[in-house]
Length: 189
Image (cartoon, rainbow, N blue to C red; front, side, top):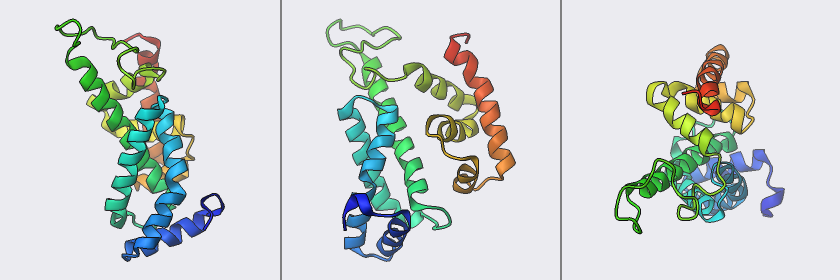
């Protein structure tokens, strides 16, 4: 099966087969979704090696947790969220490693990691990722809907279905998330 010709219906069918223990179907579905997963990861981590790492992490999570996909929405919608979370997790790990210590200075590094030595920071929307981290500490319910809508452009109804929330709740969470993000993105915090 050509990975570029696989339709969403075929991907859903392969995912159901993989849930039933079909190893060939699991391999086929992972092959079919890999370009999309990598694209999502590159949206958060534009430095290719970091995006590749996040993509591999997401594919592993998808393979091991495929039984948790409920089948009510598209499999690709479910995998989209897994990819976003994997990319954010990779970013957090890289950020924590970068802020631990500067090996050249032997002292704590500044609040702003050096993009020359920290690949995940190079070329990313650091302000957006930092804003999401800040919002998540006090209002975690707003982060995922906000990222899915404003960064990845998912329709409100798909987000509501994916998060198993009423449409109005999703719209309200996105609205409140935007209100919290605006001052952080402008540097007013």
